[in-house]
Image (tube, rainbow, N blue to C red; front, side, top):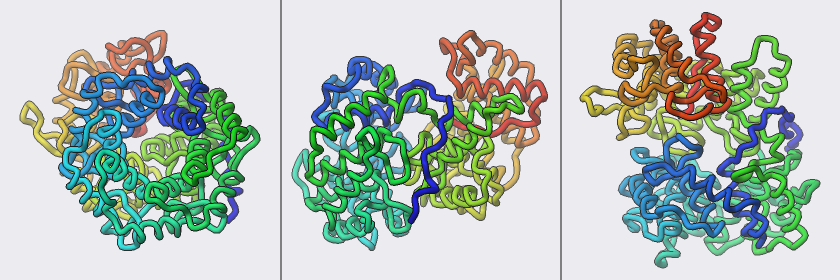
Amino acid sequence: MSLAPFPAPPEPALATGEPDLWCTYAAIRTLAWLGRSDRVVDPGGIADHLAGRRNSDGGYAWTRGMLSDAWATFYCTQAMTDLGVPVPVPERTGDWVRATWSGEAYAMMPGQEPDVWATHYSSRTATGVCGGDVPDRARLLAWLGRLQTPAGGLAWSPAHARRGVADVRACHYGVLAWRALARTAPVAPPWDVPALVDWLRARQAPSGGFRFAADTGIECLWATYRATAALRELGHLPARPSDCAAWTLSLRGGSGAFVRWAGYHVEDVWASFCGVGTLVALGDPPAAELADAVAGRLRALAVPGGYTYREPSLAADALTTAAAILRADPGDPEVPGWRAWLDRCQMPNEGGVMYMPARGAEVRCTLWALAAGALADGAARTRALTWLGGLQNPDGGVGYWEGRGSDMISTAAAVECVALLGAPVGRVLDTARLATFVDSCRRHGPDGTVGHGNVPGTEPTVRAGLQALRVRAALEGPDAAALASLLDRHRVAGGGYANVGNRLPDLLSTYEAVATADRHGCAVDTGRIRVLLRRLAGPGGVAWTPLTPGGGGPLADCLGVLLDRRLDGELARLPVLALS
């Protein structure tokens, strides 16, 4: 099929100049494959930045101040290991990883259902970085074995496998989780290997590249690397390895680095990671000329503390761009260009909006983009609705991205996305299963009251409670009494709302409180919220909490501006936005 409809997004001037965790890991790993680790820019500064993402629980977060998860913990600790830098207090990280063990496999964070993404990350972190083993090898192998679908491929979870949902990425992560165990003590793979190999080989397109699944639109380097690396670990090659190598090399751009697919001109960090990874998996190590070209391109993507995905001056992201649109003055001439850029963050193989172009689509980014007026085209909206329907997990909830375990933040974001796209929730999501997931997050708090946690088994918070109420409102209608009770428990005397208890207010909880009250037709104490906003405002922008030094960046500034406009009557109600 023609790839012309999916060029790179136009280039807005909204780059943050900040490093991205996945970009940083991808650059470091690519240089290691190329034998060019000495080309890493400022490894000491990168190590310090990665260590700064470590939380007190021993896990690591995507960005400072967010909850620990298996994804960030793996990428931070693996990048430090590749740099030859000791991981701080690895036994503490090992304790956090064990806390995500479900009894059979690993979840992204404690209390979630396990998925193959998290199981891969934490199996490798536990056995590699932390130098230990998984809690129960036999049960983990049995869980991995249940990922195999009748067609032979692997799924995100055993429940997905029962539905026949297989994906090249799930195969990759399942196989590498098994390989992590096998490196500790030899053990046979827990699948019908010939059937798995046949399923993976069948994903190779006539061009030589691979697709994620049988119904995926086009072949891309991400799918190709995941497929070839999985096949290599199983002791096999693609059915047509020379075609695969030739197709991969055909995606080199003007600098000599890689683009993700034909017709997309940005030589980004993930394309080089996947292109080099594919050649290594095929047993065709890159020549010196290619290695030097890729290393040179990666050097151009370095920023203080790590790497971003493309030239730093052009490395915009969906959240920052949506925030700029939402806080822009009416008639701002830059808005149409920014919105067009967001439209182009919906790419060929997924209908959601990507945080950064050419990586995976994420539901929070899709929510912010829709709130900012993106995806106005009918075909784009249809694709987004189809993607949202496929995002719902068997437990009824939704995760940040496809196949990731469900959480309340993402579930409420998905429901809001459906509403913004103008569709009935029941047409897109299974509402009975949706309600079941929300109920599974209910639990008693320390004070004996009943609330909701972000994932089943975690302590209640005001934001998770607000998100649950918004989902319930979409299903059954608003419950003003339940909202009033929740807000009363978390109202801070000095102004605003606290996520836990009622002592330390924060911007995000206060924003969600007002947005949810608007949806329920309930009044809020605007005077006390103004007091909090004055405390949060400073020379560096709007802070996330009164105790946070300096501003919180463009997202905090956006929420602060929107709240201020809502209190001044310029907005009838706040757009629903969620982060954590």
